[in-house]
Structures are given as C-alpha cells and as structure tokens.
Length: 203
Image (tube, rainbow, N blue to C red; front, side, top):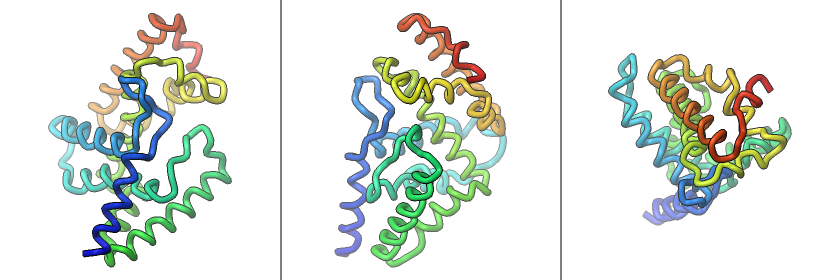
C-alpha cells in the first residue's frame, strides 16, 4: 500500500511539469494536460480509423508515455542535441526502473517499451497523436508569437515540414485533421502576425 501511495505522489508531479507549448489561456501546458488531451483525441479518432485498434493499450500509452518526466523533467525539443537526447534516454531508463521497482511489476515498463519501439499499430498511433497535440496547441494558443522565439523559428519550420506531415500518412483521418489544423494556423499567422507560412516551407 505504501508503495502505491508513493507512486501516486510521483505521478502527480506531471501536473506540475510544464512544456514549451502554451494553451488557449496563455499558460504553459503541463505534461499531465498533454497526456489527457491525447486520450481525448484518441477516443474521438477511433471510429474513423481504418483498422481495429486495442483502445485499452492506446489509453495506457497515452497516459504513461511521459511518466518518466515526473522524475527527470521535460526537455524542450529545440534543446535536444544528440548528447542531450542520449543523457535524457539514460535518465528516463533509470526513472522507469525506479517506478518498476516501486510497483514490483513490469506493467509500466512493458507499456513504455512498446511505445518507444513503435512496432505495434497502437504505438504508431499514439506517437502520431503525441505530435498532433503539439500541432493542436499551435492552433489553440492565445498568442502565436512565442512559437517563433526559439532557435530561428525552429518550431515553425518543423510544423510546416513535409517530414512532420508524412508521419500522419498511415491513417487518412490523421493526415486530414493535421492538414486542417495547419491550414487554420497558417491563416492565424497571416491575420494576426502578418507572416506568410510559405516562408517556413522547405527550410
């Protein structure tokens, strides 16, 4: 019982761990909010998917995919150099071991391993939803100016890249909703900041 309470206390920290992305009220998005939003997106998408999906597994991966950040914290994508990524991976592996030892079983490790390996359809779907939620926050953010403040428009160049969009191609509904979000963000950029999104394409 004590170990479960200790685990719940660790997981709560995801509500206090903040990401670079901002919300419709201008606040930074918490990791917990991001995971919750992914679950909502998955539920809404499920009837439109082209193949059967294990929704229980999808929910587990959505809820748990960033759990190690409750211990080792989030690292913004624009700061993830190869060395930083390697250090982050090692720290997260240690965090998973800590959680596994605390709970006395491999349930969470197995879920996280499946997500990281991206071999199952469910893992690919959850990764795509992970990326899509970031795109959605670009649409919903109260002020888009912050997105362009990092490393010479790093996030805008990524958002409008063909590489990012191609990650949704395995499910037509995913690509369709991403393209619609990107269209609306382009309109906001032009109307609110006077920026033509075509300047980021191919950069």
